[in-house]
Image (tube, rainbow, N blue to C red):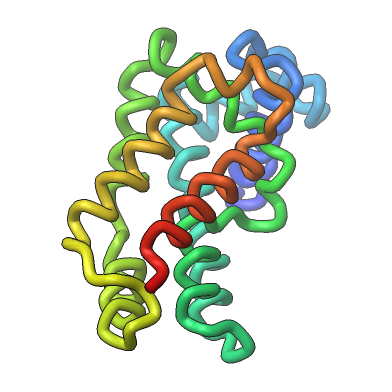
Amino acid sequence: MENLRQSIMESVINQFNQKGMKFTMDDISKELHISKKTIYKEFDDKDELFFATVDYGFTAIKQKEAEILNDDSLDIVEKLSRVIVCLPDSYRNIDFRMAYQLKDKYPTVYQKLSSRIESDWEETEKLLKMAMDEGKLRKMPIPVVKLIIEGAIEKFLGSEELSKTNVSYEEALNGMIDIIINGLRV
């Protein structure tokens, strides 16, 4: 059962990449060669499916974050940069530039996405503090740095502007963190 749920969520991601929010449950059932009834046995409705997919994505992000934190070949500033823009390998092909579509069509799902971005900052805050304490980054109030990063990510997700460019979400994130980290370097 869990593999079926996972397959359905991965199909949501795939369909989102192809069609934005215009995909249907029929699209998912065709891709997976299952009936819509089978999807609705796993998920009550599209909202529940989207909520589960957001959680599924953030679980993968936390796993990737743990890999980065345990990578002794990276110095503290590299770890910090990578953790902040952490995308699991399987999510690198997601076109997050279209996430703004959630804001109007599925505001509760967008709110969940936003709240997940705003939570789970413990490891990042520890890295920021360590980098500042070690003199690798200039001292700034960590809540200010956090708000700047959250604001940039939310703007990327909540605005149609990024989708009008040839810049991928991952490139935009890397550019954002490069500007922020270089601005904090001593």
